[in-house]
Image 1: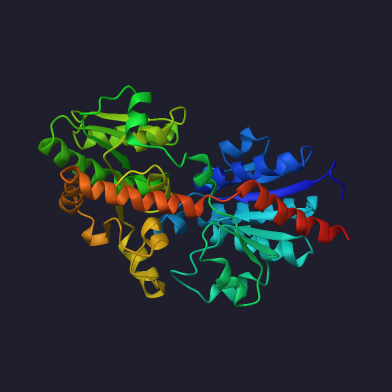
Image 2: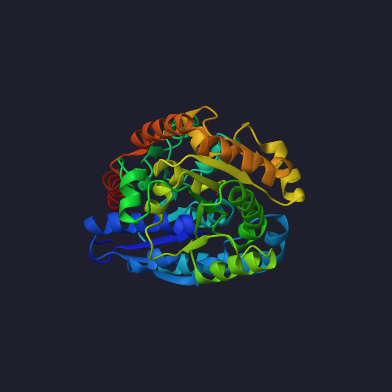
Length: 388
């Protein structure tokens, strides 16, 4: 291995992984400017010079039925990318999140002596904690986003390091509603709600109708309210527009926020956000926007995973703060009436909003680590050990 010819394989299975992968590549390029990055990634990673052999969107699925219907294609892609990685023999392989997809690759790659890192610990603190003992067998290190995760692996003899969440560095610690509204030329005396139904097509089909029905109730109660909806690609924008037309909700004042807009300013400018559980809840918290978290999956999927769940909360901000700071509604409790009432508490109670915002500020401080340096040092350490 030489720094000049360094090859790094990465597989990221969904948009949140693409975002993390782009930060990771950007950090590594500063130490290894001539490194070549390849594998599976999305547009953000590709913008960093990454070579993706397959479209990332083919892997972004949710729920039992969608996974089953697309499983043959996903398994074929996994087999093909594994063969590509083994043939190219990279200096290191990094699997980002997507454990159901990446772990099998990591096992085979690690078995062939290729240093292997898993970036983003699965939620072993929430469900299926017995996975820890297996994970440490095929990884040389685990890059953890949250401070409570490394000790779980250390207790089983594994290597893990807390790197912080790169979003905490990207989003300003002092982002606030007043400044964001000035940047967006939004009056301070209007109400704004942001709707975030997810990034996967299957999520949007479940969550968008619910959020739009809630928006209808909010519009009826607060006629001057405006809505923003960040949507990550043209395909999902078309899907949202179709749902709006089908539900005959064209009259709602909704602006779709695209990739070219700074969605963080729109979030910070909002009085409240409706958010599908996942990384988006952390983005909203870091933007200091009060939120209501909701999630719906197919009844069969929920029935299958429920026995393995070890926590009574599923929103990242609540888990990280170790208290129910914002309301959560899942499955049969995820109704437009419940979401409307939860939003109303924020819209009618500025004091409650300030309490939540202060909690989010504290969380932001905790997650704000020197991500580029920590990750680069962890990866460099493994590379140098291999070189010796």
